[in-house]
Length: 215
Image 1 (tube, rainbow, N blue to C red):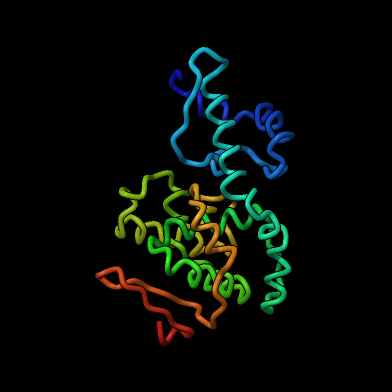
Image 2 (cartoon, helix red, strand yellow):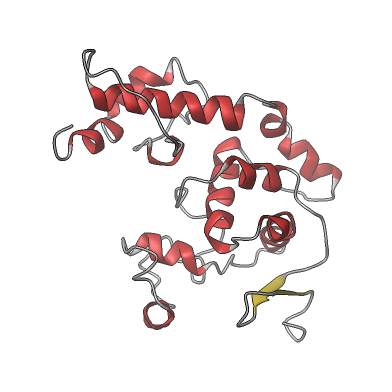
C-alpha cells in the first residue's frame, strides 16, 4: 500500500457512497470512514484488487458483525430505552458511536463504563457540557501521549476547537476513536444513576458525585 493510499480511500466521497449501499449502517452525511474501521487482524490477498479497498471493506464488515449485527435493536431502540428511563432526548446510532468513542478513551476499566455512560447521558439531559478532555485532544490533531495535562490546560477554553467539550455543548462533530465492541456493549446497557461527575485518583480509582460540591 503506497503512502497516503489508504487514507485517500477512507476520505473519498465517491468511495464512501459506493460502500454505503452494502454497509447501510453508515450515516448519510459522512466525510470519512475513520470511526467505522474496526481494529483487528486481517488477511489480505495480494493477488487481488487494491489492498486498501480490501482492508477497508473487511474492517467495515467486522464493525457490522461485531458491533451492529449481533443485536441491531440495541441501536435502533436506544431512544426508546432513553425515554423509558425518563430522558427526553433521542440519540441516533451515529450519536451512540460518538458517545462510545469518548468513553473508550475516558475510562479504561470496563467495569466503570456503564456508569460513565449514564453520567454523560445525565449531562446531556441537564444541558451541561460533557467536559471530556480527550475530545479536545482529537480536535487539536495530537496523539494522546502528546496531549498532556499541561497541553489540555493551555487549550481548555479554546472555543475555536469544535471538539472542545468544555466550551461547546453536546456531542462532538464526529467520533474521536474506534470503540471496542465491549465499550459499545456498556454504552448500550448504561447504568442509570443520579451522578453528574466522576474523577480518578492517583491510583486510577474512580469516584462519583451527584453535585459539584461532592465533586
